[in-house]
Image (cartoon, one colour):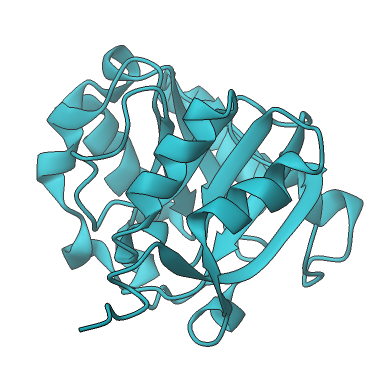
Length: 222
């Protein structure tokens, strides 16, 4: 009996492209993005709803070959939610084996326990205004490594206070290399979020989505 596509080595790929990293501690660094299709969440402020369906099936080897063609060692696997694909794990391992520095952008809703050790996880925990707070998988926190990062996308003062409390509750600034606070584009004044961070003396890193500053906010493939 032949195996199904998901039982083979394929994944549904929306796009593979070269840009500069717009977020994280790698911000501004040239990076190849592998954007996979499918997501188990429906965040209210999602800016990549086009990933929910579609995508072309590609084998792991073909994805790696296309990625390496750009000649850039930093690679991010993103979505959608990459970990809805069981073959995301062998993909990341193949990229690591090819000498890439690999970032995984993932929500807090999928188990990160099988992510290859060298991969730097960027765990995007969901505050209340995302509409997906209940989806956070808190058992992921002890699995974070010192090289990983945690991101909070902030849509309101309520979100900020929730994120502040989670940072303190879990000692996130002591657990990972960076805790990132981002304003939802067009929902929170960046200056206001900076002010809240400074008032609380929070040990976090403020960030903007730099790609939305360089290019139009809704532009794809950047």
